[in-house]
Each structure stands twice: as C-alpha cells, then as structure tokens.
Image (tube, rainbow, N blue to C red; front, side):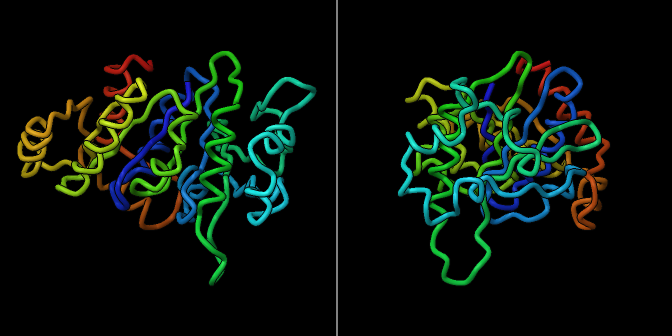
Length: 253
C-alpha cells in the first residue's frame, strides 16, 4: 500500500512517519519516500544516511518537466518490469538500523532556483507507476500544507493519513484533504498529535463538529521532543504506544 502522511508544518508529520515506519517494519518491507522539499533532518531522525535525491538520477530539477511522465517512467523502469524502488541504484536509497529504506525526491536549496513544482510532478509520476512487491509498504512524507494536493500527488497513493496538531488551522487542512480524498474514493485517516490532558477534549470535540472521524490520538512525548530537537535518531515512549494502537485500529498490523 502507498500511504501519504500529510499535515500542516509543525504538526509532527515527519516524526510520526518515522514512528509508523518503525512499527510497520516488523511486518513489512517499508520504504519512506521523502517528498517534502524543505525538511532536512528526516534521515537523521530515521537513523539512515542521506541518499542522493532521485531528481539527480533524472538529470536535475530543470529537466523534469521536459522529460514528461512517459520518459520519467522509461528512465526508472528495469527490464520492462515497471518502476520498483528495489531496482534503484544503491546511492539513491539508504537504510535505517531496522532496514527501513529511505528515498528522497528532491530539495529546494539555492536562492532563486524556482518553485518545488518539478519535485511534486516527479513524486506523482513515481507513485502512479510504482509496482509494489509482496509485503511492501510505501510511506510518503508529503510537503507541509496542501501543495501536494494542488499538484495531484495523491493520485499515486492508495490512502492518506492526516497528522493534526491541536490547532484550528491544522483541522481545517485535514477537512479539505478528507473532502478531496473522498471524491477520489481513497482511504483517509485522521490522527491528532501532541495531545495533552488540557487539549484532548477540546480538539476531539472540534474534530467531531467538523465531521472528522478520528482514528486515534498521540500524546505529547518528551522523548520525541528531545530527540527531534537534537537531530538524532528518534526515540519515543507514549507516542510509540499510541501509534501502535492506531495502526492496529486501522488494520495495518
């Protein structure tokens, strides 16, 4: 299954992507596709090396639109089999201690280099044409906000999991995402992150009033906060327990 992990900037999207990957790696071959053109520390918190961006394999950002979807697919297929992440050259895939694989689409790093649209187009093309092996799970750490929705990256995924922090803006973005995924007849789950005893009832009530069904909540976890701040492999206590329960609830494990 190909699942997009979406959310407002600062919602904890990347951290929960890592925790989800850690839990699923016990039962699946897990790939994390880093489709966020702005973040920098996903490899560090995953405990993996930084792979070369996939955009470089295809000649660089400026060539992506020139190639078009057909030529991108042709460049990524192996022996006519279609696109399989296992067939990418080793320098474009890194691994964590749990053998979670990391693939990076591309990053905006230079003044005046232009928007992230080519990266979204590459992510969409890759995901739409990706062939999954048995017991393979793809987690896409999407860019913050809804840029990916405007570029149709969701077309290449089977489902989306929205990460919401206790803010009205975060809930509103999740509502928009749910409405669009429903139109596409794709699965959608909502997870509320960084919950404290003071905010739990408020955010749950607001979500219900907006017609949002909550798959589960993840408590604020000092371990996640500290390791994220230090930029080291992610550690968690309460959050890991909560994520495991949520993945059981949505029948991933």
